Image (cartoon, rainbow, N blue to C red; front, side):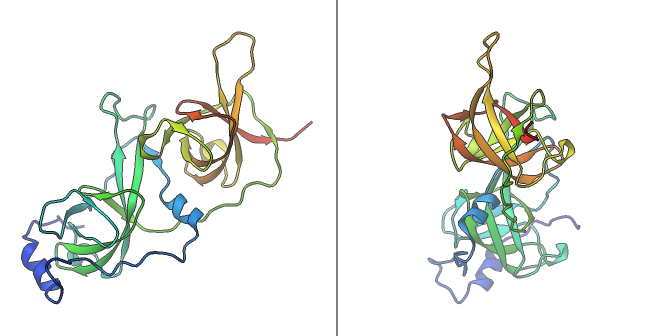
Length: 259
């Protein structure tokens, strides 16, 4: 990929939008009403990473009379890549950002949450920059959000057989949506168990809390199913909860045959 050049966006934007009112520089983004709600929710679900994504393509500005950091569906945003970088009109990208805790350095044992802010469609492309419309916003799309290729996830079916939960191989909740620490039914959480530990889409999980009480069982909080599975982490969706599930609570797979 060639280095991204820095040129003025004003003439480029003016040429592209000459037929539009200067007070209404919005792109033809249409709501994705044909998508099931659970598929959109999963596309907006969080993930984690222990390394900074090598994604030089990012949102660098908007088309408005004032400087704004946040943008919504239908807004036109500038991305710092154009036809020289292989960008074509109609291409779609996720917009994402890292949620890094200042006091906790990003590492394998303390990964950072990755938030999907939305997705965009390229509307017009110059040699080194492009304009895109925000098709969907999970949150607000912000300046410096980085781009990744767009592909809608497939929502897996939950395992039909309710197996016994494993013991002594507990994972932990690493992150949730929007940096939250408390979760309930319908929320997505990321846990430190993935395909390397045998997790598969649709697998059932149980949440537990350790009350740090000698000679006592772990307290069962609720259940979830695996939605997206990566090598070392998985995104689960909470299906039941007896009380609030929290960051750091334990999680165990249901994959032990009943005896």
